[in-house]
Length: 225
Image (cartoon, rainbow, N blue to C red):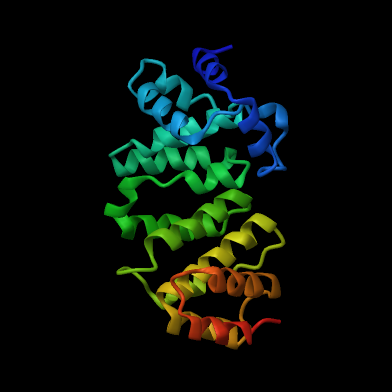
């Protein structure tokens, strides 16, 4: 057992493991130790400064879910964009669950959105489920506000996938887009441009959102398949 694994097992919470395991049913329960996210972030901060950090980042794949998340939180601490992108691309193929995928949000990406968009276009064409999910997530986080363009809706809208975790992220993306760019997004629903699953889930999530007005929610309900 590595030093990092020993620390993770020392922090384990069996009740939390039971709770969290149900949220990620595609992961073998034996690969979940049961450590909460704030503890993982603190451990990543500590471990990032250690002499073992480089070896750990090069030791993919990891054995445990928590090791993956520590890896992701270490990437988030990188302030050099090129290094952060390189480490992100090295890590993405080994992500095997929605939680590790969605928690990866490197702050340095905010300062390099044009370069990030180039990478997003590449990731969207990946055959890896969570690489595509991550790409859609980055579109949602970084390109629905001041850097928004209707072109980015098209990038997400043309994705045709049978993967549940891709389609759920697409629904989340379009629901968020309805809250932020309603007029641009609405034709995707009125003209039935999305798959029925993504279409209906996006409406469901938008209706549940506090950022969408009651008037708009009432109209969106009429658009369901």
